Image (cartoon, rainbow, N blue to C red):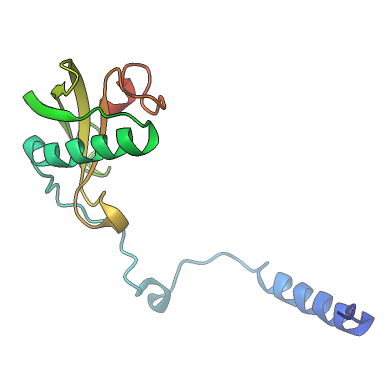
Length: 153
């Protein structure tokens, strides 16, 4: 591979200086053409599923995580006392979330608290509701530590 010639380096430097000088102008608001590309910002409806709708997803994802990453046979066999804790607990401009909690019965016979949130447009590629969850005492990678506190509102 040949090294760039001195002439092409000078041309690139002059071109860079010209574009740099053009950007030194006064900052202006976007014109109508620049604003008309459907960049109007997020529009959330607050249409978030009820707490019960997320339970099958949590059970499936818990089993996948335990079997794939931790080589464990733990599974969630049932849920009880599932209730909503908060809905949109912060400003209305934030992504709508429904925070829930409940008890998860595991196949080892223990009942553990599970804290989860259902997020509008939080699914894969922003399609559908997404679910973030944490089972107290089984947060092996400490993603929501301590005691799943980061999964609460």
